[in-house]
Image (cartoon, rainbow, N blue to C red; front, side, top):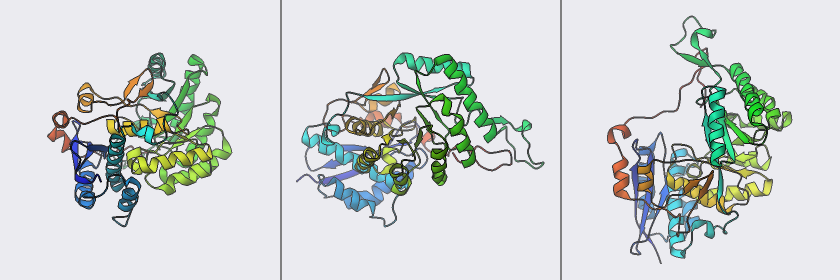
Length: 405
């Protein structure tokens, strides 16, 4: 019987926001790695892995992945928290990596085998002006990306106005710019009007609202974007207001993608079973790893919903590999968010998925297919940068109230 002999979390990337769990076993040279990264609370996740989970894991049979997941899901009594889910994910992915290595198969083969030859991805195009955005989109289309996300600058772009142009209180808090819902729901349809006039309706385009709008404005934007036939509109509502998807469904046919901030099954299950969204965008590590996400994919298949696992620039190559193995084996797969890494980061994770011509390719090595070079990973880490606290954007409206990111 193969048992767990050690668990550690390796902190890496320049800013220290990647945490990679490594589980060693009583079989010489047999180990697995998993993603336990958190851009804002990495030290808390590492503490959860090493202080809370690791002691209880030692000596367990590595083959009992489902039992280990269920046991540790309730081991702290309270569950479905972002920190504990991420810690559990690192364990879960590492165990799937080990299982694949023992079987001599890539993980997607253990999940039922390939449903597709590669994983189509969507790119991130941004520009401060519609003209600059169009140029960026065309570049990604020329590279072979089947879908491109379109943003006017950063998140909320198109909705920011100079603070001196906004009706603000006499005692307004200092701010260079403020976010305005009405400006945003005017600018984004205008952006797509311009893009469709130049590109036609052949290219598949998406947009990420990043939860900036009030619910009423989210409904209005979804309806106004209907003529431009988006591939999907992402995160038009905050997680606290997902009940408004029912009203959006009643008003228009704009496809909806949601789930980047979800950590609890009660967040995604009603949206899937009531067919209120079209794409579920949970991050694999935030749901708790491969074990729960393969169940999400199966649920999606039953209700005609697609997966679009969240990636983005703060994710690590191990989380990306886990998403790709799910994508390869899930019939309910829709599209995969792309992510690329620096040359030094690829060197620290030999065997990482290859992004080429708008598609991600895994290899046929056993397990997740990639490894971690611990020396190279250590060289990536900048201790001063890693000690700097990180927080989500603090955008505000004209009256000073916070915009939920």
